[in-house]
Length: 401
Ligand code: PMT
Image (tube, rainbow, N blue to C red; front, side, top):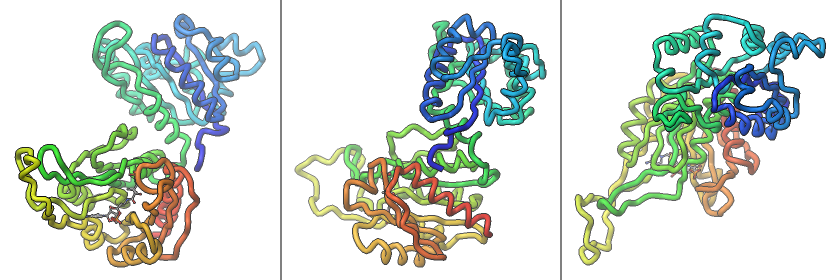
């Protein structure tokens, strides 16, 4: 699943909010992803952004009302809705939200929404007092009852110089919901847990033992699971990456904290993937105050951390799929097989961390995927594509259960 957007028909409904200008960038990005973007603007939206802008960025005619669309003798409100793979309404004003909640169809956008059977995503954007009004809250709840996906607005400074809820979410977040709408929901109803990033084992308030994990591999696995409809919990060590959209995030620091967090959720999950680089050892003594450099004992005394994956293997339930990672620098297959068997895993993704093109920190990876039924060397590719390939194989095993 390299590019879920290519060739897909995305209808973007733009309504009369100052945030409409931000959606121009969204249209441009989707066009770069080779999606076929059709923009529908309400009359008030054209007061904020010219239809010409969206026409130039999408490469397609922009539809502004029912009757002008009929000029080409096409029933645009029917064909747009019928042929759409996803309908995204952004920004969505309180007025349009109210009309959608009531099932009204008095303009091209609301008519198109009633005529589609594709997923409908709604991104409310408005002044925070309008957003918190009970009528708007009731209408948004109604949209969810109708099966529309409402992407909650961000909290922040708005054009009206007020600070609060109601700010159009960032495209990086909304794009994941569009990707999810375009992806077969093979993980619908499945509870997934993924661990990512390093752990930090403190010596004193200033110093700790850790490793080079950035979290990229685990976060990619979480994104791929969300896109497939999974209910994802991401247990993350320290990472500078933003929380992936739609994922329940729990941040931890030490291996012991990760152990507690993982075992708290493990029993309810159908798939667990342990991509985190958990420290095997921690300093025997943790000092409350920074140790003076002339007082540090240069023979660092360490003690072992619990092996979380081993514990999960012992507790693995019938029908649960357990996936480990192995950071190796030699004998990848032998070392991976040992861990697969010793820890009672269904799969282990072995990656070479000795070079600078795979493993820690880098954007790409190459994984030797070992499973009960054999070994498969996945291609050297992005960590997002690696995550998709690993999920394809996990989903196949889930289906075979
Ligand atoms: O985060 P990135 O920068 O993208 O880098 C990705 C990665 C290299 C960290 C990732 O692809 C990876 O290899 N993660 C596993 C790293 C690791 O700890 O490997 P290991 O061979 O030491 O551990 C084997 C398995 O046991 C892992 O699933 C690990 O999560 C688990 N483990 C290890 C130690 C421990 N105390 N508890 C564990 O659960």
